[in-house]
Image (cartoon, rainbow, N blue to C red; front, side, top):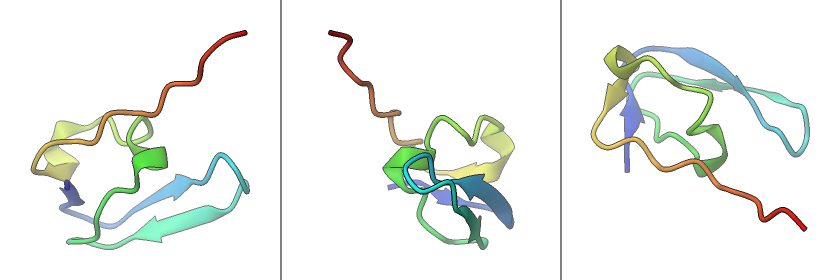
Length: 54
């Protein structure tokens, strides 16, 4: 799983809570589409979760 290279803050879309990630922390799947700068990512970025449209 990918990790961040520097401290960054993402927002959990389910709770609205701001979550701080420190260098070396794994990128949660739900945050994959929020971290778009490749210079912040070590490893392969997780694919963002897609929701089915009904």
